[in-house]
Image (tube, rainbow, N blue to C red):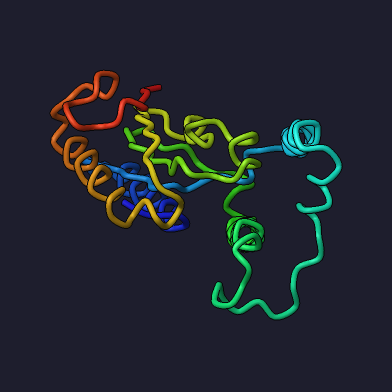
Length: 193
């Protein structure tokens, strides 16, 4: 299992072990998006839909020059926090994309099963641009079970969200319930592809 970029590492380790004939009992991918699977047209389309929704201020706020020395949230006005989160997400996405540039050109598929846990709290752009499975279905050739879990990219690993996530993972590892019909106490936003 792996979170964020660690999901790519877990995927590649599972893929290589599976290719060598080892049985993979569980592959969990936690909120790992695949930015290279969204083409320019899809990105532009998402920007256009959001610009139509919010008007010209969308582009002004989205592409505004970054503050020079932002070191943390302390002392920042509360209205700046969402913008700072978007900027950090953008910077993280750029670094992530650069790290995967060679790998992504010919990303190999995985013939086994996987479970993808996506954070429900996402930026408007990510919601407009990425499908629920963040395009993992293109690469996981076995059964891909996808969940939308409350919390953000990092906060899904904090209480109270991590408690639900832990129950999902435990159930998936034991394969005790059908992901289309959630067990008692588990979120109903689950689909299987």
